[in-house]
Length: 426
Image 1 (cartoon, rainbow, N blue to C red):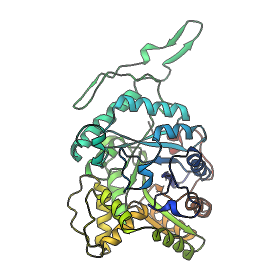
Image 2: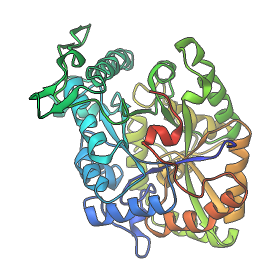
Image 3: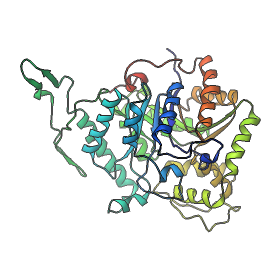
Image 4: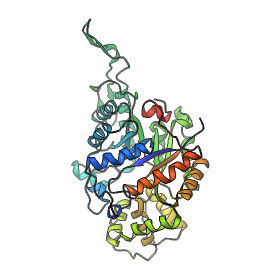
């Protein structure tokens, strides 16, 4: 079969646009399991490969609504697993504010509950506000990635600590376990000391997928070694292609093939039957954005207080950003290319938290996605609807049929686990 576009859904109940919840008829929260389940079923109707939930470990009312008030990801996705069949279930969990044993057990549990559809979005937690909730200080970027590298190694060892066939369950002999197939890991490292194993058998996938979104040098090295799927922040096809080629080039030294890693740039599609209709929808979305709301998000995303600057003046020197390396690089690169003001920049960030906004008719959106896919900029896309449901349903009903007609998108799910469906090795 020829190569086809992969799609993830970035799930925020109120939509990726900071004011998406204000659209007529929009979902206005992220705590109703009925609404969340309906969104996930819609993703499955659209044959999406996986649902991806970002998360944070602090509550900031000036940030995006769905990051301040939301269900805990693993609890939520366990419920979603009971109401879906095929779509992968990706949850974010921190390597800075967590422990490997508990995480390995939780994601193995979700993999069993879902029949092999679990995915772990491994993050180092960039926002320093989280530290106050754990009685500690926030490590710098270098140390967070050192911790993360060891954390992921331990988790993978714990998933591998049970061999296939370790559960015998022989009633006649009374043998329940084959103890020779259950192993301690006896890990002693710089940051973690873990005996193992976990008290749950090997996950159906062998290992749940590992997702990552780090675009810094350290993040790319970590992804090249461990990640199955990488989400990227980009505003330019050329830059996306350069990142794609560079990341794939790191794989061979880690004993991996280029096809062992799926790269999905984030995109917020705003789709209409005509370009004018799409533009009208985006204009309405942006009309809801006020200066205080957008500047609050911009300050949070850049980890810098920008409230005192002239909105219509040049963007101030933001210096090195220890929190959001890839995000800052993508945003400031676009700002420089287009000679943006601070107001322009905050409008961009408000639209999709800094991700690429693709606005146009269904044909225009399909053409652009095809161009990125076929020019070596992406293996697919992490779709970030500005609001639910209309902003998502438009994409499914108007864009996907065009991609299917062109042979670029599947018409049915493949069999097997999420790892099987994506053709990824353990």
